[in-house]
Length: 357
Image (cartoon, rainbow, N blue to C red; front, side, top):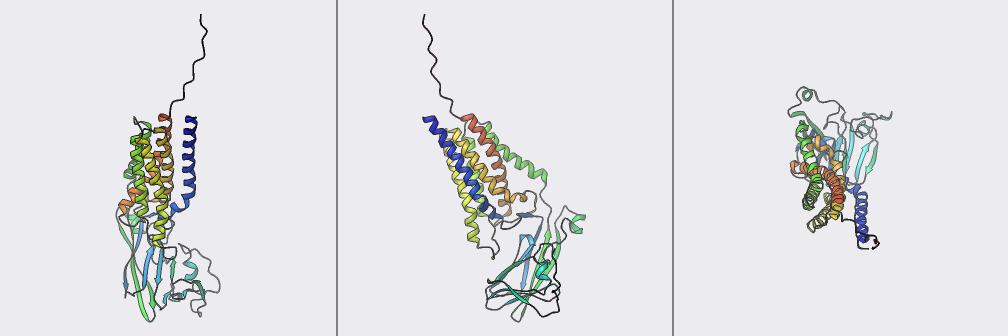
């Protein structure tokens, strides 16, 4: 009965891990705060002239999006590309001019939109409320590169060094004050695949070797502790999301939930390894490996991108993602190997009676 109970307990642990993966797959994707986690382009605001207390502007998603938050009692007005009225952002929410071409062009990253016949930059504005909050995010095509699948000419001519692609300005008014938001769009070469891929494969090999070649389960336990630390670091580098999506505290809490689950799985697996329960440690390694992969896969594009979305140093965030992906894959394989290598031997059965004489 002891062997049966032990097998049942192990099955329950594995089942709990699978359920955890399915339940946490959604929140784990919250780390990137958007559609992509990495890009070779990068946009940033360099100045706001004059600065207006209570009005904040940011570029998001490497320059793909532009955000204005206005907590003052006065409206911020943003013109369209022909200087026609486009947006009003103020205490009663956001109003958009349906006669402005920007209303439709700015809904798509590359400006692919059907412009209705009612659009007329010279017509009297027709305001439509699109939000009750004093904040708005849109694709302002002055802040990012618009040619999909085609590099800027200077970059294509010399792709081995960084480039300033464009200086840009987004004008707006706050009451009767003209405000200029200036910024720049840059491009940097991605990391060399001859450096990135060997490093990631080495991490995968580390997890595999810990379960496949080690004399006992302790190296596997150490690898699990490293994976738990990577999950926690990854969560703590969660970038601040757009104000219209949620708070930074909410994004951090959403990222910490799967990370803390991974830390718990790592701690239990290391405990089992140090107690000499290799098969149980292998099961926890499989569960942890899947948890790490679920958290790392949404950010996989940082492996071949020059920039990534992260709070704090990009290097730490990049290492965290690399460990999530490499150790995640390695621990799944290494854990399966450990279960087979360190499982309890089958109980011996009594020998059949032999005749005497």
